[in-house]
Image (tube, rainbow, N blue to C red; front, side, top):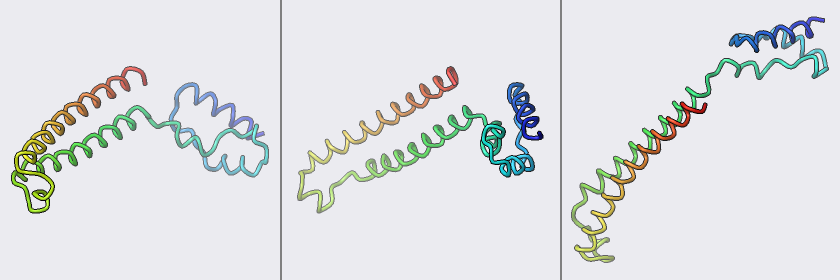
Length: 130
């Protein structure tokens, strides 16, 4: 019937790499036929034309820049707070605060470099093996 013929055409177009093969009309006809084997098309056809490599690279890159934005905000805050306030003075002296502040700046700077290297490494792996 029409479902078997559509399945054959779907498979041929899928093998040839066509990216627009979803047919809502035939999917409705198939859903009225209660056999699963004759009808292996429908919802999943929406995902056929998606380039997963581009989407994954875009998501990872967007996440990297969001994290970088948050880290740079934190770095600016640590750089601007050179003196201790009253609450911190109860916990540590000025010399300890200065050492802790400088250590935090170094740790943040190293984290930025580490994250940038990780982003480049992940992009290279994705472009090579995806």
